[in-house]
Image (cartoon, rainbow, N blue to C red; front, top):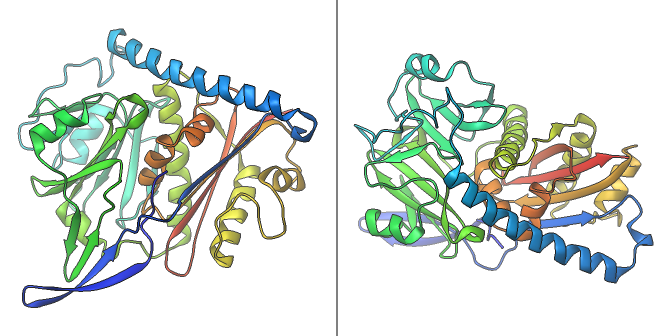
Length: 375
């Protein structure tokens, strides 16, 4: 289970300064997953459910291994960033589809075309998503000069001066870049990172580099996010002040990240469903306003009760919850490292998805994903 960063503040002394430490405690659960095999799960024998669950987990592990082998052997599509030779970056440690921080928006769009979607992010700017039906998925953010100031990908578009790429083992990353940071200091505030996190953080080239690992694929690099120091400094607190646009941004970003992961694993993307998005958002709002974190709400309703009450008829459905992650990217990477959540994200039977986000009074986000297929 991923451990959340919660609102526990400790105070400590720094040389000549009074510092504020934002501590990441190690005893709070931040992810929950629930899945039902049919619209009438009560009529299915528990032993059959347990057997089906075991087969599903074994199938997913085998599929993950086969996907990884096929990814190594399969040629990239023509006219894509993968197909062109990925060259080592000239100015930075990392590049994405041969794009580096500092490149102009004009040069990016000459190469990639216009973004498929642009949504508000936690830095007060926008993530621009570039892809072809979620293949070659890349998100970029621009600064006030229309230069790349942030980048993220979970696909094989990564190049580096040290040979680190998608699929590199964590041991190799650390041998090249050293030990990960364990805290971030911004002004008088120190953000303490959890020792058990499933990513490494480095400060290089005037940027913060988060390298995410997939523990179900041997702790290999599954995604990288790079944020310029200037853009990071625009975010004064760990949690961004909520707004309607940020809420919708997190929802659509988590939807896109889910589909990029499905494509990466050889599955069809899910379709957005506005009705179940409303169901999901109301549950996130309920949890945020009433200070709880559970699939079952305070009225005793399960996710499937809530969906049925909203008139959603399903043959198969599932729900993922996350709480306290500072962005949809961190929420998604945590979900993918938890087997039950990963199964929902990569379940072939699911066809539709709605994502709902809301914030509590401490600006901490609650994420709800409702997956289903129609009857």
